[in-house]
Length: 136
Image (cartoon, rainbow, N blue to C red; front, side):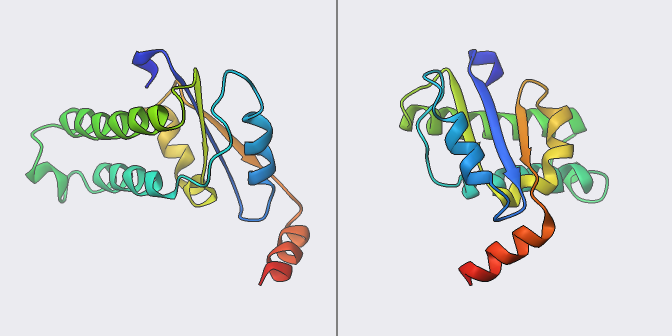
């Protein structure tokens, strides 16, 4: 996405920690898409990339001659998915998406996608617990 000139922001954090509010606030900018539901399907693309990198020597190498070939392939899949999402939400200058379940892999994604921005919400753990309990 960065090659196309579009910014990408991912919002994460523990479920019930304020990710929806943070995402909604970011989406109020005229440069950003309107608020959309969680992009949980994209999390699986990123998890596949992370798994392929972690298991490159044991598994992935059988299908790609070099780690860089796999990274290029996986980046292309992600770029294609993000391009389609951007078109479907009005082709904004900045694509803002959220999925709390993507948060644990943010540290591994950040160096792979240096132009992407990762926003993480933080809320007192007892408040998160109380909120989750109230929803349950």
